[in-house]
Image (cartoon, rainbow, N blue to C red; front, side, top):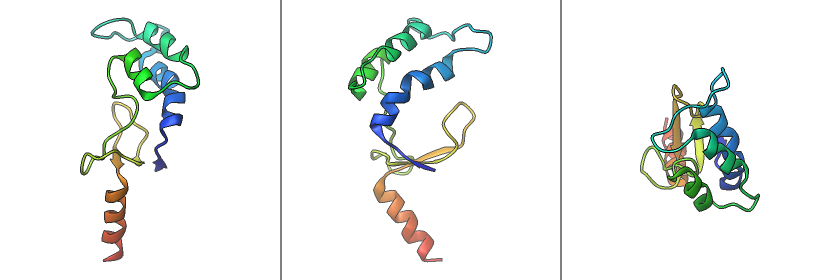
Length: 108
């Protein structure tokens, strides 16, 4: 379990992209459009002050920064479970749903 931090997500996006797309044989995974290696290089070149919008422009979507609550769809503040990958069991919770969970556990 860990708190989500947008600055940390932005700072780690190039490494996470590389982990997801660089194969063990040194080749890069394929994308529907463009090159995963080119995307990695562009992410790695982003300045320290890059925004989530900058990351989205490089990748072509906003799915790598910021998550929605698995329960209600609001912006998430905590990740629960495995670090996300193709086989992970991961949930994201917003502050309101975290409080609901605390209240639920207290009623036991």
